[in-house]
Amino acid sequence: MAIGGVGYRLGLDDTDAPAGLCTTWLGAVLAERLEARGHRVFERRLVRLNPNAPFRTRGNAAVALLCDGDPAAAFTLACSLVEEYAPLDAPMTNPGVVVAERPLSPAFYTRAVTDLCTVDEALRELGAAGARYRGYGNGRGLIGATAAAAAEFPDRTYELLVYREPSRWGTPREVDAASLFAAEAATAPHTWDSVDPGNRAVVCVPHTPDPVLFGIRGESPAWVRRARELVVSERAALEACWVTNQGTDAHLVPGTCGLLREGRSYAVAGTVVNVPSTGEGGHVTLLIQDGECELRCMAYEPTKGFRGVIRALRPGDRVVACGSYRQGSLNLEKLRVVSVAEAVVLRPPLCPSCGRRTTSAGAGKGFKCRRCRARAPAAERVVEERSIAPGWYEVPPVARRHLARPLCRGPPAFGPDGGG
Image (cartoon, rainbow, N blue to C red; front, top):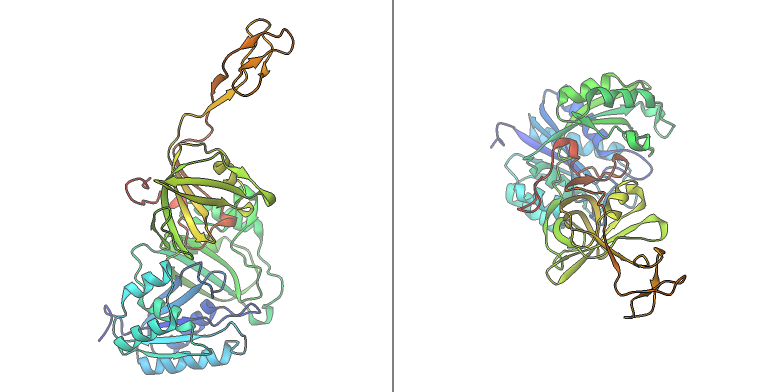
């Protein structure tokens, strides 16, 4: 039975290793070879999964191809390419190949992007659909391959990935930085995260020895191709435009202080408890409260200027904090200030006699003037001018996760207190 007019879905995951290769490259090569053999490839999907999964690559990406043709031949070809190119002797490389002619449950994809799944759960899903599959090594890649084949995107973006000549893999990339800044300036906000203008950094060119030269993310195939045309670089060997769940916040679910689970990502509403503190390494700690429970939120040094937003918060501010929950902390990706409280600072008053600033006379004893010895009974109450206003704030592109929705796409909406 065809899946929504598509003959079969082919999922692929975990074919890369720290020393090289890339699952998207293998998926792009596979798509070309399928088309050369008479298959129709309707769509190439790049599917980001839970960014906190304990066994993952940095981007935790799987791919899916939506095709029409002979499923058995596609499965044989996919397995042969995995065996030809994937570093199967690498300890953390455990590829999975899935070809499904009947629908897989989109709920499995949702769990894989917001929660954690097991190989056994993937096998049950594949068995129920009568899918062809093969797992290599410990078979962990079957989780991502199944999720990719099952994926449905309520919100979708695009990434045009440009791949290098194989002879250049592992050598310094030749991409003109000025052309990347010009490309984003010409196409933003319809493309994003090619560069970080605030930090004068290039974002879309990887530093790992894999086949990717650079990638352009955006709202449509037309916009990413327009930006790509402006980029000056070494000659490309292959290009592919992927439909993705990147930049959609697909990993975030509503959460409540005290009920968060390790390795998941949440949007949590709460009230600021403390004046944020800056610790060793420049990391900023914020406490928020929901009822009786407190939650520690962290803005780490790589989030750069975003830490200034967190430092500007004061007790009583109402916020929605978004990020990944790990080791007892919510690692912030973005934050909404729902409302700001009046921030009052108490300081020693001026001397009523000589106008000099007084000092404390001791606990509960008021204040005294060192010059004329006059007394003042109470502290001066000063309302602090706030430097922060209600609205959404986000980490810069250099610190943004693949799945995190950039504010240039519009404000997120997380429950009654979370909308823009």
